[in-house]
Image 1 (cartoon, rainbow, N blue to C red):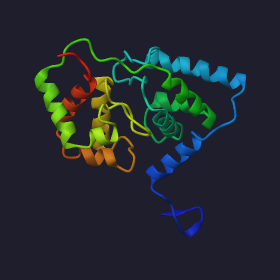
Image 2: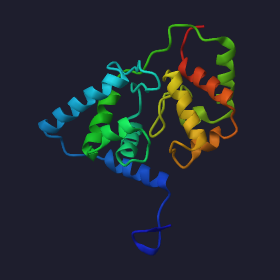
Image 3: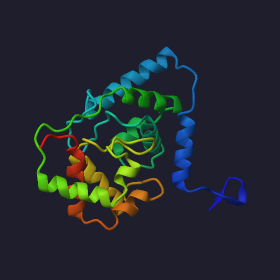
Image 4: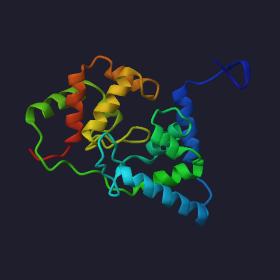
Length: 209
């Protein structure tokens, strides 16, 4: 593939371009005007109506935002804004956001507390199966040993179980864009039951037995 430099220029992989652009977005910016801040606050309030005012979603297959790394938030909003992730509601919400808006949204997300562990005790067998799968795959390497997420890798701990399962299914099938295809590659050899067990384990982090 050739880039804008001419026939001999090589365009970097999509994942590299996304991370580069996201890095540029999170670079230091001039302070926002009050009008811009108000606009972002209003739009962010609309986001919380679905994602949870306390950072914890209560809507099926809608992710909790609390505890997500700011870099990850910027990168995902960028993908939605550019139409590189398929979700009609999110693409519409991100449409027209400036780079300054993306960083402002990310800053607000970082102020939300991470979702707490479920109150009900986990099923020991399901929890053990999911934990064993994370030990055989680099889940804890990329997403941190406690699955809190870092940089462009999202927080998985105590995320909604149904959202985790849907996301992994989409990564495995290729329906969802990842960074360099890493997620599709890691999930390629797993069965659907494996994905169910993984989602259960990750969503029950810190739950009392």
